[in-house]
Length: 95
Image (cartoon, rainbow, N blue to C red; front, side, top):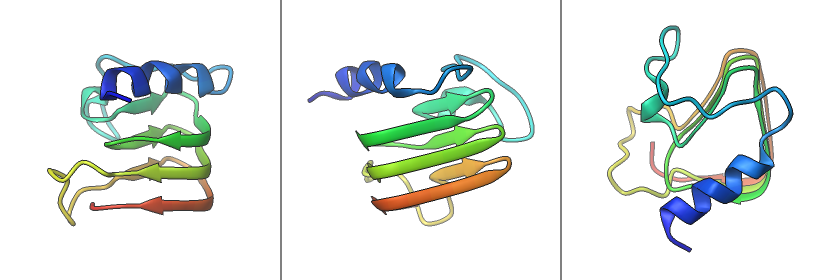
């Protein structure tokens, strides 16, 4: 599955009240640097992302793989949450 298709499928997996941002601001920086950006939070189940995830209040990931993009470096935050971070049965690569 190509990255664009993956992102479109992930949009359907976001919980109610979340949104994919095209631009954003502090405290996490611009939303455009993330594959998924939830203004209130992010809940993903059975998802694979090449890049980064950010949720303003919570991030919940279940059966997931994120950060597969080889351009990500050890100093980059791949999963960022402004509050609750809950991860179960998955892998965070790179970053």
